Image (cartoon, rainbow over all chains, first blue to last red; front, side, top):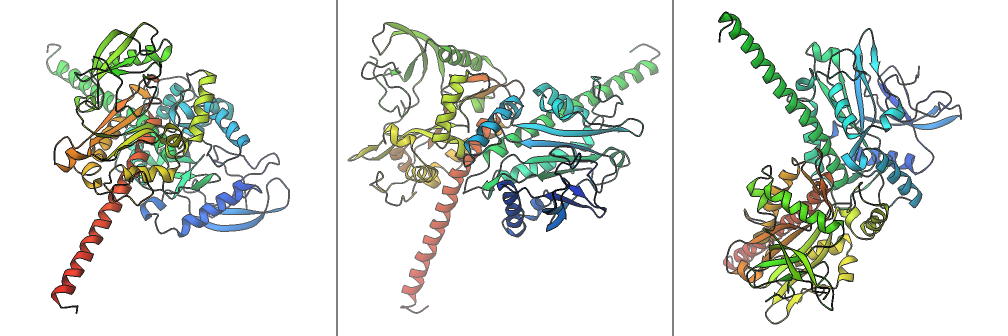
Amino acid sequence: MLKVPEHQVAGHRAINGNLGPVIDNSGRFYKPLLDDERGSTELAFYKSFCSDTRVPDHIRRFFPVFYGTQDLEASDGSGFRSHLVLQDLASNHRNPSIMDVKIGSRTWYPEASEDYIQKCLEKDRKTTTVSLGFRISGLQIYESKESGFWKPEKKQVQSFTADNVRLVLRKFVSSNSSIGSNENPDCSLASIVYGGSAGILEQLLELKAWFEDQTIYHFHSCSVLILFDKESVLKGRTPVAEVKLIDFAHVVEGRDVIDHNFLGGLCSLIKFVSEILSISKESSIKACFTELEKKCYCTNNGNY
Amino acid sequence: MLKVPEHQVAGHRAINGNLGPVIDNSGRFYKPLLDDERGSTELAFYKSFCSDTRVPDHIRRFFPVFYGTQDLEASDGSGFRSHLVLQDLASNHRNPSIMDVKIGSRTWYPEASEDYIQKCLEKDRKTTTVSLGFRISGLQIYESKESGFWKPEKKQVQSFTADNVRLVLRKFVSSNSSIGSNENPDCSLASIVYGGSAGILEQLLELKAWFEDQTIYHFHSCSVLILFDKESVLKGRTPVAEVKLIDFAHVVEGRDVIDHNFLGGLCSLIKFVSEILSISKESSIKACFTELEKKCYCTNNGNY
């Protein structure tokens, strides 16, 4: 039984007669191949990536597993259409908090058509793409059983400023309840989800090391997907959090040049995440001191 | 006595009644302050940079020493004008080979005027700025006492392709004579000038580490200047080679964001330099083997 992915945070959705991806119950994600260049480019990428022995295994795990293509009835009712069969990245999460971060300070590439370039450039300048080297394309943050997910509207996400991005990255790893409000996020999960040896930061740094060297592909308009399950994290389950790369409809050959556009944006995202970690470390040290001071005060009957 | 800098490879020159920088005999470089925003921005940068305690000393050495400003008769005969008084970076070199590499995959910045953005974007797309994340703005390579310098015309430099850039970076550290021709450069100085603990690569990596962290400035349209003196290198003198940052007329505040545009381009340049080093290492190992094989052949009277 195919259905619309519940946890899709960006891109076209297979609802209201639109063309979009569908999932099954066995953890597979079916992405319709578009008729234009985007479809052929993404398929060509998955085929080439699968068999490219230059890609090390520890990097391969950042990409969705590719199971080939399959003809399926398209979600827009237009009949049968070829779909990429991919790993459904959300399938092993119950209530995943997800962020889709489009990496790069430009989403266009020199070989594209003039129309495409102008369209991209305009959007890159309107969003944080140019200023931050990345933009958040979509997100959902799990709050609690009672209030469910906070999933801001597409329009709201597209209008995020640098400060909004900072706040959202903090909210993403916080557990105070009213996360959609402007309450100061507690970042209580930052050290586990962002930090730690298996956390987001370590994974982003591993990706960065590869991007400093690889000249095989240039990943234009590609996203880093960050996923974790709040309840699993609190129960101490692993993996704590996952980083995945998705959307390869605009990948071009690297031609012996590194993907400096992706790398620069990735480094910027890394800096944002690091900042949250160092602030939350500082504040937990401060909290420890306050606690210690209180204890001293009590033991000394109010006299230091 | 002020004179036109002999070793200027890019930018406006103080010749034919044009406004440009001049030097004196004591190692100072006088750069005319333009009347528009560029002048005030560059002066503000030097003033702020000088006194900013967040800039570590090992990074400060990559910048020209700033001695303040001085009113001088402008080189275009327009009367007195304020000049930045800077360290003349070429003054301690006799026959410097110099390359001016403008870093970044875009030279414009969001705050600039629409006209400026469009002008920059057009040039960025025509040159290697967009594709490589940097472009060579000018260069001179010392060949020999007899033939002097190879200093290609501005037009030729502006039309460099990725392959031209690769070739020029190889020529820069080669010592076969006809360097202006298409002869295969021997890269005989690569391991000393690019490699080694005080070489270009190490210096670029040091800069990179700072750019991964610093959020004080965004260096738009700024250049990395690479200098070395072939004869000094061959005589084993130090410093072997120097990396300097120049041109700060479009530096803007970082506002807690890293300069992902500069960092990406710098990483791309680093990759180009590393490639030349690894190729030249490979070929010298091959040469050793060939030499060894010859010896074996001789010792064994022609029989292995």
